[in-house]
Each structure stands twice: as C-alpha cells, then as structure tokens.
Image (cartoon, protein in one colour):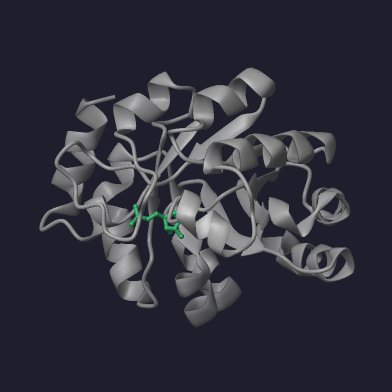
Length: 224
Ligand SMILES: O=c1ccn([C@@H]2O[C@H](COP(=O)(O)O)[C@@H](O)[C@H]2O)c(=O)[nH]1
C-alpha cells in the first residue's frame, strides 16, 4: 500500500477536486469521495477522479433497511471502489447484506460513532455510555456481520484493534498538532492515530484548504 493518508475531497466542484488530487497525488495513498462530491457529480465524477490512478474510497455512509442498502451497493458495483462505508447503526443484517452485494475487492467498513460527536451528543440522541463504549459495541457487531473493518476516531482505535486484530481501521478526525479542529470533536494527530493502530488516515481540510495542498500533504507525510 502507498502512504496511509486518504485525502477527503469534499467539494461539489469536480475541477477543484481534480486540481487538488493532481497536486497531492504523490504524497497520499488514496482519495476519499463523500456525499458532497457524489451528490454533485455521481458515477461519472467518481470515474474522472479514479482516472488519476489512486485508490478510491467511496464514503457514502449508507444507512437504510437491508434491502435498500444492498440495492444501493449493487448500483455502485461498476465503480469498484477500494473502500465503501455503511453506518454500523443500520444493524447486523444491513451490514451483512451490504457486504454480500459489494464487489470482491471492495473493503466494506462500518462507521461507528462519527468523529464530530462527543458523549453529550450521544446522550442527546438516546445512547447511553461514552463514545468509547459505543465504538467497541459497534466494532464487535461489524466484525460479526463479516465486514472488513470500521471507521472510528484515533481515541478509540487502539481498543477497537485489540478487539479485532485483523480488522481494517479507518481514522478520520485527524489534525496536525497546530491544525484547526473545526466541527470535529474526537481528534488526534496523524502520528498518534497510526501509533494506535489506524490502517489509513482520512484527512480533508488540513490539506484541501491549505494555501498549498501539496506542501500540507508533504508536511503531514513527514510526521508519519
Ligand atoms: O466519523 C467520521 C466519518 C467520516 N468522516 C469524513 O472524513 C472527512 C474528514 O474531513 P476533515 O476536513 O479532515 O475534517 C470528511 O469527509 C468526513 O465526511 C469524518 O470526519 N468522521
């Protein structure tokens, strides 16, 4: 695998996405495309970015009844993403059906607790316990459902990995030591996320909103 950083290209503007991808391509291991990009550009947009030659992580965080999610994954099959996300909160059957519908080479990973949420946010939506407990509960469920791994913050990845030695761990909410945190609440540095067991790091704004995205990607790479 190339470097562990997947750059999140969160923009509806395909030309901007292509420009950033081309600038940072030698200093990242892959490209993450999420809802903002996909809703604006669809399959054709994903294909254009994939033509740059880096693995594509399609972060659509699918969450619906099992049949609907399975059909959505089937519709995504021609894109053959390297990684695809569903929400673990969709339940075991939904995750099983998503995995069954995915292409053989696609890692299907489950979002546990969004890195933008803290304990208070969980209480507000009726989830007792802290993010750590909930991440471990959903990691165990994702493993039972036959998925490839989970998305969690760098604060939980060590414990999640202890539970699932050969799981694939995606860590967003990653900020360089002096980085702007923004809407993220459970944040660690790239180095710490890797030391604690992350398989890949998802980094968006610290790279994409930097004056020089290539320099920002290089600076992050140098800390790893
Ligand atoms: O729990 C999660 C799951 C996914 N994300 C996504 O990662 C990037 C993070 O972007 P930054 O600009 O580095 O904050 C973004 O695309 C999210 O949709 C996440 O942040 N947390």
